[in-house]
Image 1 (cartoon, rainbow, N blue to C red):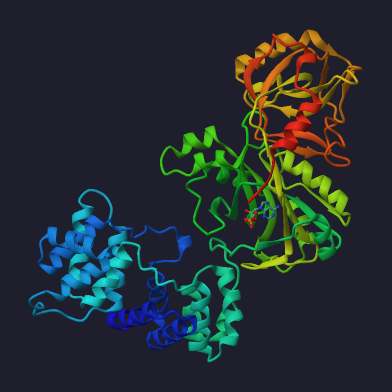
Image 2: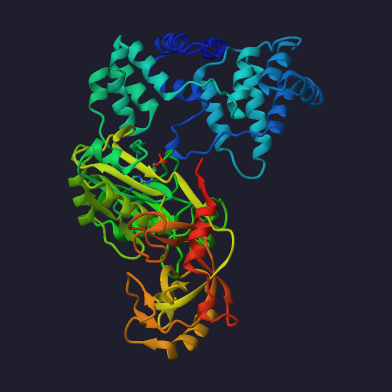
Amino acid sequence: MEFSVLAEAFEKIEATTKRLEMMEYLVELFKKTPPDLIDKVIYLTQGKLYPDYLGMPELGVADKLAMRAISLASGKPLSEVEETYKELGDLGKAAERLLSKRTQLTFFSQPLTVERVYATLDKIARTTGPGSIDQKVKLLAGLLADASPSEAKYIIRIVTGRLRLGVADMTVLDALAEAFTGSRENRHILERAYNLCSDLGAVAKAVAKEGLEAVKGFKIELGRPIRCMLAERLPTAEEIIRKLGKASAEWKMDGLRMQIHKDGDKIIIFSRRLENLTEQFPDAVELARTHIKPKQAIVECEACAVDPDTGDLLPFQELMHRRRKYGIEKAAKEYPVALYMFDVLYVDGRDVTTEPYIERRKLLEQIIVQDEWVKVIPNIITDDPRELEKFFEEAVQLGCEGLMVKDLKAPYRAGAREFSWIKLKREYQAELTDTIDLVIIGGYHGRGRRAGKYGAFLLAAYDPENDVFKATTKVGTGFTDEDLDRFKELLDPLKIPHRHPRVVSLTDPDVWFVPKIVIEVVAAEITLSPTYPCGMNAIREGSGLALRFPKFTGRIRFDKAPEDATTEKELIEMYKKQLKKIS
Ligand code: AMP
């Protein structure tokens, strides 16, 4: 197939502002394309060489390299290429102009074919190591030398990652349906196949070669990502319950979505956008290997940053330390992730996406080995909005974004955003900008590296009216090993067998203390919480105030008596003063 056919189609697509016209140009192009080439034509139209999920080397040729190739092919000095680029602001157009000024076409020039362009670009993408730059320049210059000015423009845009014709997946599917089944009505059949395999090229090849029946037969395959099911949003618990009736409310964690494919020892992890995350998350790979029981499975989870010592959730930003190409192992140790499983799509050869949510959840609970690093996401099943709100507050205080409420009967609808999953997020938040001083009233036994010490503490604010200390948060983050040794020394003599009479708490720590030691903490926010009595009913009936992402600053306030700690009233005021709408 001549590459000029593709270039002409690109010219037309670029010139139109109407989606329908764009689609018609695609239909025309697809009809002219031999079925064996249709996948490649589609990848090129989207400025790629392969479907994203393969994680193949990307083109991403640097401007400098491309300019050298243009200079070689056009016979113009590099400085002129640079100037033309500066003038036009588009390297593709610069190539087009400079190549049209070539004095004579080489005698042996042959028309470029799609096959040759694709194979050469593929070679450019895969060439690495010493000397690779010169080799890439040579390969690219070779293509440009045989290209027409318009073809050169598109080749340059593709290799530099700037094709941007804006041809969306759905437009391609519409055009494929029209071109090969005679009706756009069949788009949904192609779309279903695409949702199961995430590869437009594979769908196109099947429909072009074998027709609609072949597409209907598409199945889930291990190693090929399934397009993610997405959620709608409603503002209140009442509206969600009105819509779904009795439903399952799961924590909506603030992490990174992972679709994990397990085939024996082989683990592949895809992101929500279907990038391959396997290399980047060796810790998640190991957890998947050891905590997913079946030989073969596809599960979905949220990978969250946790404090390695306490297992407490950390803010989402901590995960950013994992977005790197080098030092992966070290980052995995310093910023490990825990996996919170929320769905299962495939088990030992069986596609379970068509089963209702509630059955998939049961299956998930059976196939996952749960411990502190891997959990099935906590949920409640309810039709009571008030209960939903309580669960919501608790989840937010623990570090979640909110809740994901799911229709008990809904199948897993790949690629769909529907009301079978509804998210409930906060509209307001109260940032905490100052440090506060709280009294230690209880302790929790440490685990792992912290075994034999206290790993976390229950803290309280002071209520001078009733002369009591009211629990408001549990803190386990921010302590060094030395801090914890010190706290053991300080607190062991204050141990008592029951709650101190001046302490008010709705939860029981492992150990109670006489309220005496005051420590300084910071936190991201003050949040509502049904589990802490401090500020109970002050803002909202049935809810107290707690801290979100609390952290010890390192300062023990020996200068403060417990009665000098931050008061309940002060916390309520801080909450009210800081309350802001989340944009
Ligand atoms: P959003 O990005 O706000 O549309 O929310 C959807 C995202 O929430 C998903 O892509 C997941 O990464 C994430 N998520 C967190 N918890 C859950 C859960 N329990 N069920 C489904 N998705 C979840």
